[in-house]
Length: 320
Ligand code: A3P
Image 1 (cartoon, rainbow, N blue to C red):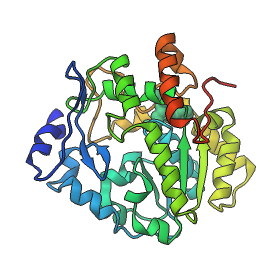
Image 2 (cartoon, rainbow, N blue to C red):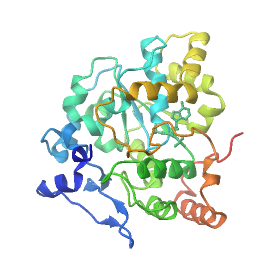
Image 3 (cartoon, rainbow, N blue to C red):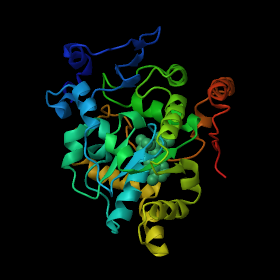
Image 4 (spheres, rainbow, N blue to C red):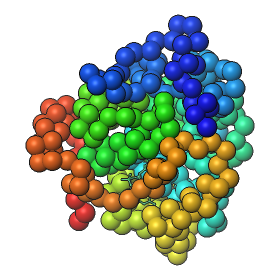
């Protein structure tokens, strides 16, 4: 399996690829390349099929958008898988889980060719900033949904994601080391605060793009309301009962079970053998309390507040 992920080797063979050193003093860090100011991972060689990730990323700008496209835009670990399944059900009008994984609709993995090949209605997803998305997102005012989550739970979720991945994708450091990388932005997709601030600034430059802001904690608190908000934003005609059914079908417990069954057919397994790697780990608000020491939590708050105090972003850190 690991051969599919020989990213270090792949990155060495691509001329002009800017590969920064993101390792800490213990040698722990991420294998990313720098593209347009952002640290990105190279998709598995199997998916790249000999193509350069730079050419792939450039091609995204030219992908044709359709009027009924929807794009989920989020920093990693904010709940994209959950929201993707919700929107797929709302758009299809049927309570049926997608057989494909969310990654088959991920813009920075499939690039222009992959986007063009998806039949409508298309529910795409991405961690990229607005400037890297297809030009037509702005031109055609494609509907985007942003999902955000409190940064401490994002950090914990991201750490668990990476420590369970196969080498050389996975992270070998401990939680404290990861937190340092997280707050300094030395990891794939950069820092969370940079993502949020960049998204806000870029959207201010293209205010006609319709964006619905969702919050993971609100979705947990009242999933039916969030499903209805999404349906309204997308201009879909639904019944209250259908929205309730969607919220129930997309509850954490249900989706975790479905993922286990669907995994059987997954061509590429990104998780380390014997690990508990999954996109459906705990699905809770406030798990960060089990990971941060009091001192670490205070340091995290200080760093976060320094960057974000005037940004207008506010998060909930415990269940209501
Ligand atoms: P945890 O690691 O805290 O459990 P993403 O989809 O953006 O990668 O985010 C993954 C996070 O969302 C994981 O968080 C995962 O458990 C959680 N998640 C996935 N499906 C969920 C659902 N139906 N309800 C609540 N949380 C969910």
